[in-house]
Amino acid sequence: MTPPKHVAIIMDGNGRWGIRKKKSRNYGHKKGIETVDKIISAAIYKKINYLTLFAFSTENWKRPKNEVEYLFKLLNYYINHEIKNLLKKQIKIKILGNINQFPFKLKSNIRKIERLTKNNNNIQVNIALNYGSRQEILMAIKKIFKKHLKINKTNLEKNLYTSNIPDPEILIRTGDTNRISNFLLWQCIYSEIFFEKKMWPDFNEKDFYRILKKYKRIDRNFGGLNERN
Image (cartoon, rainbow, N blue to C red; front, side, top):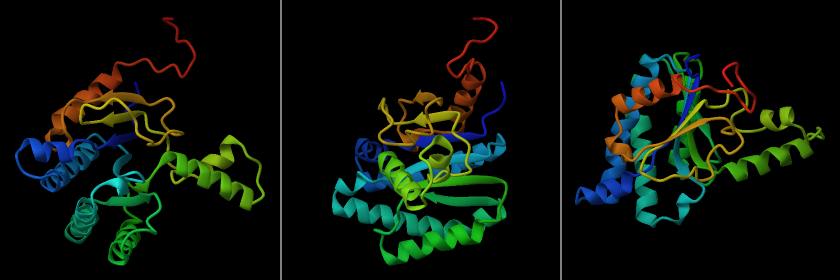
């Protein structure tokens, strides 16, 4: 089995983890940032080319205002404090989603980190922000119409946020929830899906490696049959 080039993760359970620790949902989100760093390092160690992290969905605007504002604050903090580390480790950051609704300072920081890391080539970390897969597909179709192109698979994929990024072989969701929640619906048609009971702040490198090991034992037929079938 060829090692995966692309792993996508729905980082679920931060808020519930914070409550279980008798703290707050925001405390859980803060601890979740530490897990992000661990898993990026683990992905680099395993020579994975692309890691996509679902950080803020189009539905997350429904959450309490103070929680949304804290998430934005955390993103700003992460960008400001991790930029040197990202450059040192040759990590490229790409944003998937529509950030136009975000506060001005956050938008500026996001564009800055994309610009400063664009030539890094150790791993590409895609961060899904204000992302929804249905909206992404509709956006791609509108772009195709605007460009007067044929509606086909090739043109649609070229106009998705994930243009020129291979589909993820693995999709992981933490937090003991068994659904994909409007995430990479087009791209994950043949992804091997692993639902983890652990909340995101408790997820670690050993869990990540265990999933990679399990993936290696899977026969991927893509709708066809292999010799053993």
